[in-house]
Length: 330
Ligand code: SAM
Ligand code: SF4
Ligand code: SF4
Image (tube, rainbow, N blue to C red; front, side, top):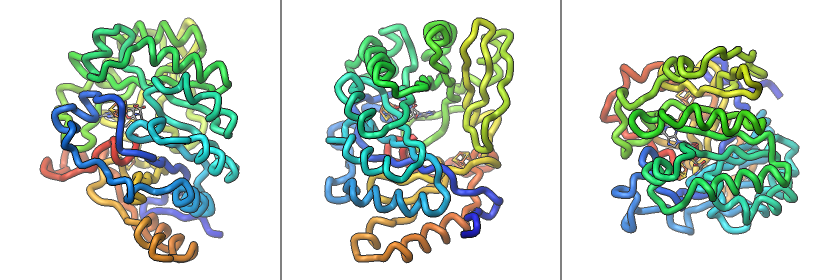
């Protein structure tokens, strides 16, 4: 089959699947508590894809060229018996990863690994408990996340990466401690520029600690050539050994290489993290669409794709209603 390319010649290689829009944390930059409170209209259970539905769509995406699947959310580990989904997806022969806040890993890591999950990325924005508490606003602790990382390591869910969103005034003082803590254990820390995803986090450019600022804190970084086109992080070797990555979506956009599609928990296909709407695949699937019909829908959506939001951020309308990260999957 001819390679499926979008209007900018970008192939479809990665699929991120959000398995739930709910979370056990309320990170200020993602699900601020005053918006995502008890009255927030989370997806009703009936609208959320079953594991069989997720697996069916995943298999179609793999047939179109997807080589990597990442489970995300919300917090993916809130979804019951997630290992059952992993064991289904593992049969497609693609790399299988998950992004998690880590606190439930001590409970679930062994079953996830046994089911065929390859590796995890754990989000951790600070080592200082008070700083972490102020960001995540949920009563969970750094100690719990570190226990999650240990649990993942002990069952071979590596190489583990740690994701840190850096927001000015919140946690830039944590960067060096995080690097020191993890580089000695061969865990790569990836610093993410705070992004204007969704519309609830009150994002302002002044809050972004830029990749340049982070690089200037970390001296003698040696760039590591990217391993494949579409690699999200710019990677660097540290003088003391180990590596860090920078995800520079705001100041050094990488849309030109973006090969990622996202599937929300209610089965909508999004071709950009900053999209305003997605293509509903779940309704036609439930109404009896054949695999060929669903493939045709995905093909047509991808082949018409023109997204490059990060490259045109400055021109984008501030009133553009972007979907939330917790819904679309980070
Ligand atoms: N709950 C899981 C977690 O935190 O790892 C998975 C979902 S979360 C939406 C995925 C990633 O998106 C996390 O690493 C998180 O830090 C990142 N993220 C969320 N909001 C962000 C924002 N406004 N800017 C940059 N990264 C963000
Ligand atoms: Fe939850 Fe992850 Fe968003 Fe934090 S970043 S609120 S842990 S989904
Ligand atoms: Fe991909 Fe959209 Fe991010 Fe650009 S802004 S890298 S197109 S997800």
